[in-house]
Image (tube, rainbow over all chains, first blue to last red; front, side):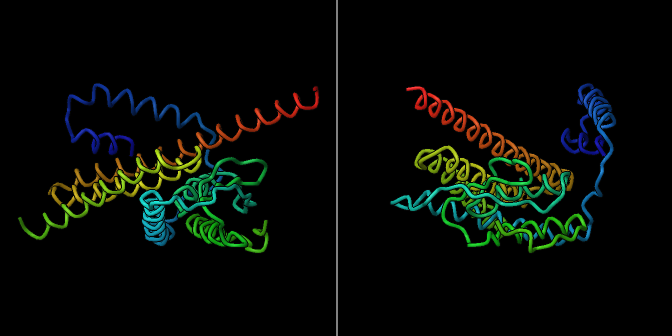
Amino acid sequence: MLITIWWVISDGDTTSWIIGVPTVAATLWWSLRQPSASQPLPRLIGLIRFIPYFLWESLRGGIDVARIAFSARIAMRPHFCTYILNLPEGPARRVFINAVSLLPGTLSADIRDERLLVHRLRSGPEDNHDLQACERRVADLFGFSISPMKTRS
Amino acid sequence: MDALDIVSLMLATGGVVFFFAGALGLLRFPDVYSRLHALTKADNLGLGLITIAVVLQLNSPTQWLKLGLIWLLVMLSGAVTCHLIARRARRVENRHRNRSACHDADS
C-alpha cells in the first residue's frame, strides 16, 4: 500500500525511488513497531455512508465560517463547552475528534479524561445533538453501537 | 471553452473565494480559537473545490488519485494541527490563569 502511495505521488518516476524506497522501508519499520491495532478498521459500507455526510458537513462548515468572515459586523459568541465522549479510546475516537473540527461552528480543543473540550463560534444546540450525530456516524463507520443517553453533558 | 472548462473555472473561483475568506477570518476574528475555525474549515473547502476543478482538467486516473491523496493528507494534517494549536493555547492560558491566581493569593 505504501509503495502504491509513493507511486501515485511520484507520477511513476523511477529516479524518485532513490528517496521512495528508504521512505517506504522506514515507514514500514515504524508501523510494525507500533502496538497492533486494538480496534477494527473502518468498514467499507460505513465509509460509503460516512463520506457524503462528511463532505456535506465540510461544505456547510466552510460556507458558515466564510459568511461570518465576510459579514460587515462579526456576529459571534465564541465559547467552550464540554462533551462527554462515548467512543472508546482508539482510531474511532481520533476520527471523531478531527471530524468535529470540520463540522460547522465547532472545533475540538482538548481532551481530559473522557471529556472533549469543544470550542464553538456561537451558542450550539442545547444537548450538543450536532456532536452526538457526528459521533453516531463515526461509530457506524467503525461498526460500533453507542448509547445516545450517556451523551448529555 | 467548453462546458467542462466553465465548471472548472467556477469551482476554482469558488475555491479562491474560500481561501480569501479563511485569510480574512484570520485577520478579523477576535481570538486564536475563532481564527482556527476560519483557517481549517474555509481553507479545507477551498482546497477541495480547487482540487475538483483541476481533476476535471486532467485525463489520467493516477493524477486524480494523486490530487485526491493530497487533499486527504492536507485535510488530515490541517485538522490535527488545528487541534494541537488549540490544545496548546488552552493549556498555556490555564497556566497563566493559575499563576496569576497564585499571585493574587500572595498579595
